[in-house]
Image 1: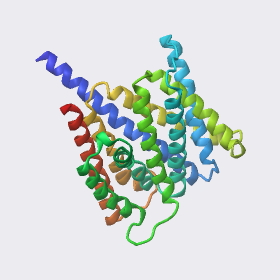
Image 2: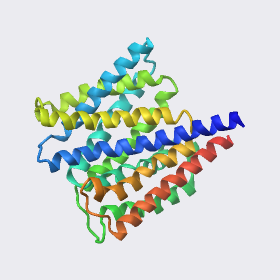
Image 3: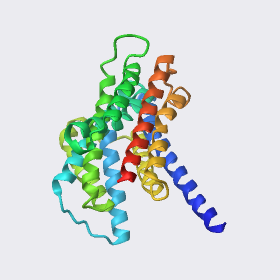
Image 4: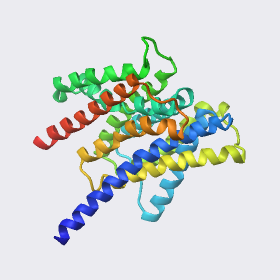
Amino acid sequence: MQEKFQFDLKVLIGCICVFGSAFFFYLATVIIKWARIKGLQIDTASFVFARFLLGFISVLILVALKKKRIRVKKKRYLIGRTIANCVAVYCFFKGVDLTSVAQANILNMTYPLFIAIFSWIFLKEQRDAIAILIVVFAFAGVWLILAPGKMSFNMDSLWALASGISAAIAIMYLNLSRQMHDTETILFFLFGLGSVLIFIFFFNKMHLPQYSELKYLFFCSFSAIVGQYLITLGFKYVTAIEGGIISSTRILLAAVLGPVIAMDPALSASGWTGAFLIFTGNVYLTLRKTGRYNSK
């Protein structure tokens, strides 16, 4: 009985951590919107650079405390992961800045759908006709988010959709990298090289922040990094299926909390339908992928 209680407690802790990560990832985007509402003109690139730089500092501290060595085996996987992740984060934050927090988060969470599409195209052994049908079903939800209540859409919404596409590529590279590198090596490369790339490409849009700007840059970055560590901890105690479904609750968090804490307009009926279709598609793909993996 005591062993069962301890096991259930660990699972509960894992679920709380994964759900907490979804909340903190969402909160990071809310802070960007708060800065805009406050009238601060902080460029998207500054938020992205701050996130990668603070992440790199946190990884350096972690590596020093653990006394671990960084060992690179397949550099191209790490570079591919970093570039795709930089594009994903920039497009995501740009989508938050130009549209609404809810819309950007929901469209960013389309990445499982694009993973299914890319797997169909590039990985013949993983082709799954039913999964593609579910993707088509879920993309009806994407359209409802892009064009709520009318047959046209705001071009700015494509930034968030692009973040879902690039996030899918980043995760596919992560799967390849994980076969050869430990967590510290991947994060060291991601945050370190990511900081350099963002600075090189966007240095003309950056400036030394004032104190009022620095607060928003720090708390946005801190929130995102807390989310990253919580999801890493949570997946130690929950299964892939549990973690995948709980992570997808960010769609529902964005839909429910948007009008409350981000001053977003409330989702229309078509917007809610779109969010539900994407959420359902993500859950089904998680269930199906895990089932296929466990059966092998």
